[in-house]
Length: 391
Image 1: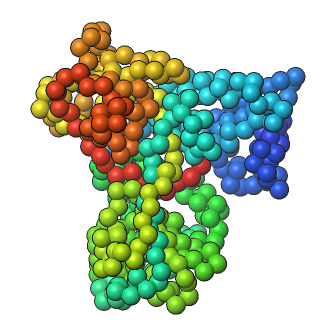
Image 2: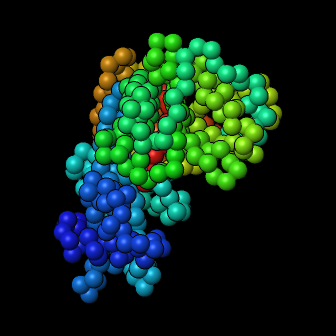
Image 3: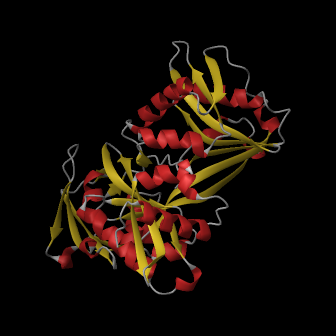
């Protein structure tokens, strides 16, 4: 059931969260918890008058190419140990997904403790990060910049953050980002308190315009970059040169990049890098028709039909969807009554990987995840998933 926002309920939620997530201090006084609580809907199950299970659904907005859409960020999924196995979380997740659909929230993301657990609710890996690790010697090729300048500050510096936001917002509004969070003011504020030990470096070009930034921190003898955005190679090299000035102080460097990043290509000795692709967050298409209407599609055919199968929690997605290809105009989508004439068929988790993740339709067919029933070609734009946020 959807929970009230009152003092009694907050304290019940706090007790459960503190137990389930091994919190040493009360979250009632934790600004990081409270900021999320205030911008969320809470769902829970009571037994014998006591709150036994809880899920938080935060209210976010994500950019999918040129369309901002509402997004539910699911977190704090918890039950007391004596209550597990009673189906509470399944009932709560069903209610959340139904409420999202009714309130025009077509998408949800979460950080899984178990991928298999969340797949039963229709979530699938669609957000990855490329992790680039290397020793300081790999940075020796990046010389100090002659054009522009680097500004450094603690990550809560408002003046520097105003420059960071310019770079981030230009990326968000580029038309290329896919399922990347449109950071609201409250979320920017929370980043400052959630990561109190972070620094930020911003590169300004010759016209004093911000063109790149990175959030970074020190973990013993490791220099860790949590977030790295750049608009051109000169800006990227400027930040790498700045990192190089720390080479004598740290044994290892690590940069978290979006999955599709090619930053490693700027390193003259790529063989000295360790590059890994790591799953980061799982996504869930709640309204297939809505998502299908805003992704970028190319096809030589005027219409293509896609079938969604096996969506037990969002059954309105099941069936055949007809895409009318309108060239540069928004896609026109309609539910088809003739299921026998679909061109491609897959379950909702596979379509999530194709529409929001890195899986191409052709790869889905090769893996046996997509059934192909015709030779009609359709291509879904890959886009950029620059997802650095965690909840």
